[in-house]
Length: 128
Image 1 (cartoon, rainbow, N blue to C red):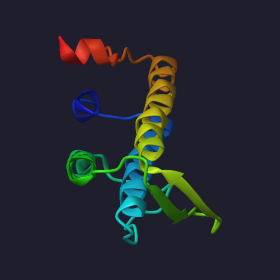
Image 2: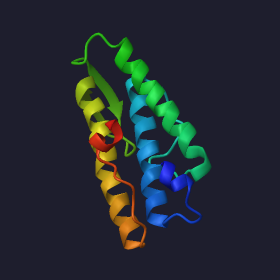
Image 3: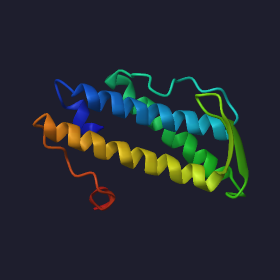
Image 4: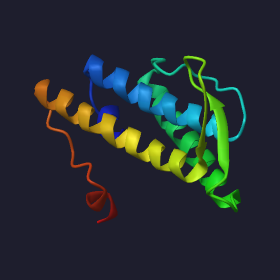
């Protein structure tokens, strides 16, 4: 996200994918909290809004984790296609991370194909 903020022009596909990552995280948080999401799953967000959306997503997920006593509890939800499902909270939280990782890999490939060398995004680089 920081690298995007320093770029004059962002690759279109990367903007679409990162917006999707932010929206999906928001939607899953709202499903867990039994709230109506404010975003559509493929809603494009202005890059200037990314940090605030990301921060809100992280803060909300942290509150969910902090206030949960039973990570095995089932969360009933309806998909964006209107289908009803139920999954355990721990699996939804894992999915949020895994989903973002998948799309970040796509973003890295898009950046490279656009002749932009992305910064390392492996978790261990972040922790160093």
